[in-house]
Length: 490
Ligand code: NAI
Ligand code: MG
Image 1 (cartoon, rainbow, N blue to C red):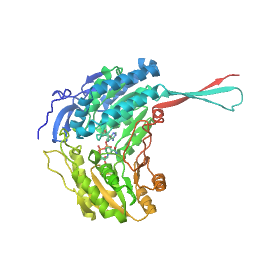
Image 2: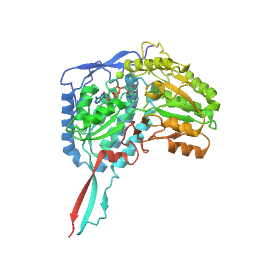
Image 3: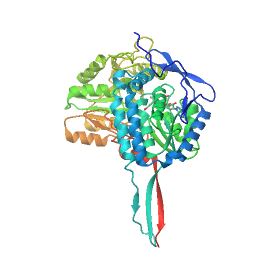
Image 4: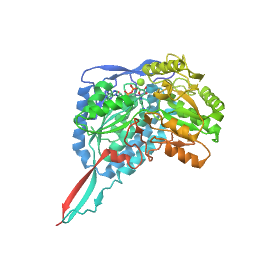
């Protein structure tokens, strides 16, 4: 299979860092190969950012924060956001294609982000112009008025993973522009290309130099330099729980604000009274979408025992029907895993499942498709909630199906995890839907659907899935600090 790899952004030149409104080489002169996981080959070379480059980017962001950008009114920023949204929309096909080449999601998926990105800009643009403060009634002796207004928190560092930069980066870019902050974005080495391409598009649309900077580089060096930097006021991190813990430690340097969206092992509970056709497709896609590389993937499927065998077969049948193939192939529904490391990791979990005695229903071994990192949708039955595959975040299309007898047991099993990101419940009993949704200890629960998101609705984790809100009216406050002023009216 060969596909057309011509792309305006892949011109054979090394992709540089975007700092202060310019392309610059890494201070070390080092580069790394940015892989195309569908082929297992390098797509391009990228400059490898390190601590010195992070220093330069933070300096550029600080100087922009304290420069002309500080004088932009909310309506100026709102208008800019609409222009940027249009510029992104005009180039969307190229962006979707670069994302597909870089991280492996098929075009059938990355093309879907178009409407979502537009909505996100529109929503945050509305917030940009509708921020307000408070006047507090108070009983301090004397005559005082106290009010607070919302100031931008300052220089924000965003560290994002590789499983969907075309969504994740906007959770930082949009509130940065809306609030008047500035940003240093460190994409993952596995998938930096859409973020780099976007930097230039946004600049051409009028984002001032230094307001958004992009420095790809390794986590332990570039990422750590950003998280520990004395000149960064807040870190927005999305990634693994393990690294999230390191981010908190690094942030202690200057006690910067931190928001963390981390891993998950989300439960999806199917009762016998559900619409089982809808539930089978929904439960399959809750786990298999994006080849299982989604933080809120519903990877623990709890099924009422009376329908267990039949339902597990139905979910496996959906998995078998999904077309796995290269990202640029028009008929691919699932692409490869994003990296060799991820491929090795998922294969280790196949071995762990076998060793623990789980019953393989479908999948369970790698696919040989043109050198890429392919694995099939995989279902294990007769899994117990204490097996490795039911406890650890795999980040691959691997579903653990676990039977239950009562609602109480399903809830207890669902909550028996260190994570608390997503969850699902499938039932026609409206009382039960609400009971279970309330009882599952996660930031989000979907009933008779799974994984719906919208920028206007809050998205957040609990427990070891992290803290800090994306989306919804509170999200912009994560990028603001309330400043109180006392006036002596005596
Ligand atoms: P990771 O959490 O280490 O990487 C995410 C981002 O953090 C990348 O930009 C990386 O460069 C950066 N990073 C890594 N170490 C850092 C450090 N010490 N300081 C600052 N930044 C650092 O995840 P990785 O290694 O790419 O994937 C391993 C596993 O993590 C996956 O198999 C998956 O289970 C989980 N993961 C979960 C994600 C989620 O959204 N829930 C996203 C990515 C990975
Ligand atoms: Mg790549």
